[in-house]
Length: 161
Length: 258
Image (cartoon, rainbow over all chains, first blue to last red; front, side, top):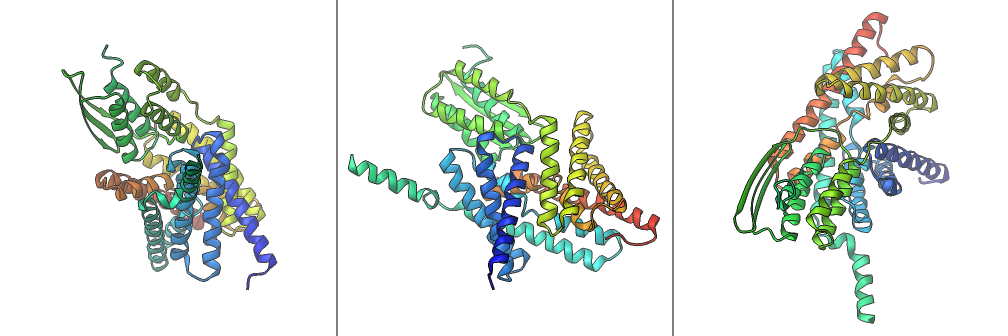
């Protein structure tokens, strides 16, 4: 089910998502030192999406789980780098934002294929809600979920000294 | 202490810079309160909306100041948000006097935008990557790359001429679709939908959506609703722009492109 060509394909797609996220980091004027972390965040999100799609969860659930992964990474990086979460979240979210849904909705409506248009419009809306839930849940979690490793490290350091 | 460099003014200006560059409401509010607390302002209240800041404060026991400012929405600049965040962190640790903080804030405001060639290239690369991610092949990605270049240049040109947001998104998505269709007919690229999806990703309201969600989950419903409406309208505009061009082309060509 999961063989080497598939993994290579995933790796390549993740790399492409990495590059595209950095491209968006440039467009939104992110400080240069955060590019790498933005890229990793975006890549992680897309990898999560790919894995979910492979497991057959469907687009909406895949968007949700990918957003959770991405928001988790954003928050961890934001603690690590002492940078607002927004920086990683905004740049990393772009691969998941339903651009395709918007396109197909517009396309079908204007080609007078109302059923398809409505279906696509509804799907776009559902993806947006899934993304909203993903971000909302992860960002509402208490901070120790993201600083566990660091705080335990500093804690052990304190007990030694 | 003069009017120009009071603590309240500092806090207010920091909030304004944050809001102007696309920070979420709770961050603006927290930053302003943190600054006021760090300099021991006796009483400070602030209310922030997507496009306005209201603040009331009592400084040095007697000076009471009320401020209200309209902040029009502008482009997102994450670098400035980072810089203000850093500044507020340092202020909270008591590293700066008010005057120093003002000087740093001035520098923050002058952090430049990415240069046009770099931004254009980035937009092209981003479009190409997304075209590939959504299932296009190499030629589609190449086409999307050119569309992305055109799009960013167009957005830059529009930005200098103060076009309304609706018209900008409508015309930009129409232009991109036209550009993609022309390149497709010229023989570059294979899948119309993959090309367009890749190219419009620059316009898709990802920032508005994300920020609106964050506002909602912080309980800032009004600001969240404003931004959500923004996201929905921009998304609608893009769909319209794309749809109109596809329709017109299909009428001219006598068949559906896809």
